[in-house]
Length: 287
Ligand SMILES: Nc1ncnc2c1ncn2[C@@H]1O[C@H](COP(=O)(O)OP(=O)(O)OP(=O)(O)O)[C@@H](O)[C@H]1O
Ligand SMILES: [Mg+2]
Figure 1 (cartoon, protein in one colour):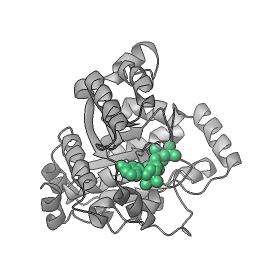
Figure 2 (cartoon, helix red, strand yellow):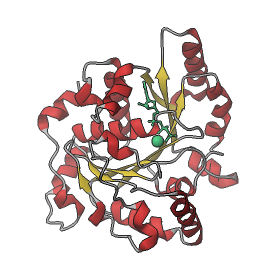
Figure 3 (cartoon, protein in one colour):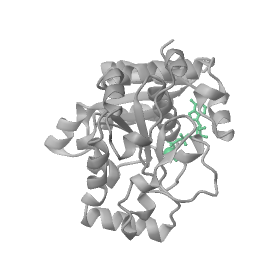
Figure 4 (cartoon, protein in one colour):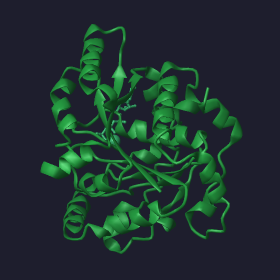
């Protein structure tokens, strides 16, 4: 029903961290959420506590006739449904890129099916840089969130974001630029450089900057513990930043209450596999 993509021209900026934790925060706000990993690093699952030995996943099986995304869903303890990427070697990644180039519907069709599930919010973690998956999904997305770090190099990436060149070319870029928003991650208010970089990016991007998240040990720690930030360090500044970003994203989605009503419909697919959002957690996320 709604698709939120996390992407970035640059690697290592916090896309996977934000995908996992925003998916969790949106679920706590009462949304039905499916987090999908489109990056062959297969790392999104780690945030949700999926064991390292579980190497299965959706995209990795796609070229071997694995279009059955429902069969690959993992119900995570957080209540978020997860479609891991699955383990993939270099040959597999090259074959997948070639297959998507030949037949974009390989991914486009299952994604359209997911988006036809009433009330479902799909949150996608994309690989770094301009990728086929991003070109394919950006036109279907409610919002593409470009993640930048609060560092000097981000100033050089702002024109890519502003123009939409990061998502396409020419008129297509201009069309898609309207759905692009930016999260500035890793802001360290004690560092002059980090602060100056963050301020410069915010000044430039204006309303397109949807939020900022502080740099904190607890964020990396939560991954090390394979826990979500709102469970691991609910009182941290980063957790509070995360809830604020999720609240602003949720404002662009159909109301969660409508989703709950739709979810009670007798659907044999994914919705019936989803646990209702916990009221305690919902109240917590809206604080
Ligand atoms: N706000 C933050 N404070 C501290 N550490 C962070 C923060 N955000 C992310 N990290 C850490 O930075 C590292 C990179 O984050 P992450 O894997 O989410 O980036 P990515 O953009 O998905 O990387 P890639 O481009 O390789 O997919 C991780 O170790 C993560 O725990
Ligand atoms: Mg990543």
